[in-house]
Image (cartoon, rainbow, N blue to C red; front, side, top):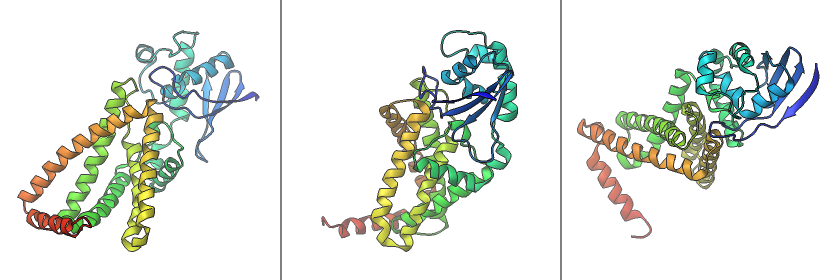
Length: 305
């Protein structure tokens, strides 16, 4: 193959482009091998056919349409109606888009049947997020078993943290797991809705939020080694910023708009939490009177009193 080039993707073009990684292109008419620089080891590159020239392929990648096309499930006509060419011209790639769509459907999409059911894959994604390395939002996909395992683990940590306040027991554990689930859904959908309002595409953020929230799992060590509490606080601050920076890059938006998404999510969480507390207290699954007494004792024991 000839004409091997490293392309630096454009971070944001127009309003619909998430951050794009670097791509290696090995070109030989009539096909090209396209490889993301951050593609996990063992996953195949994309084989694209139908591009008349290397320039056409470069323009498709730099416009942002290449990755959008990789995850588009409709027909060629639907693609033309919904997306078209983001650079505003046609440059005769309609047939190329159809061919690329077929090839990408076969080669470019990760094998989600094995990838999403692998808990290690989620941990690898979380480790990349904490290092400020991100992938398109569509690639953070995990199976129901992996999602449930992470939410249950986070709920267990949360229940241990709130036990001094509302007491321990099955009711506390179930309430904590539900609160973690509400947080996950509220952040995923509220932030996606706010970013979409400001011009970003409709981002599937459930997987990304799940992977970034999983970064709280190491705080479990604080329960066994209390001296790690200051380090745990720093870890929490860093993981929050890593999550927020990722949302800015995935949505191609300013930090202030991501912050609005967080505020919307917090509002939904507060309402849902109040409803959950009311239901659990009415059912007798948590002792609100004991919780109030614990709060008063904590206030009296605070240094200011």
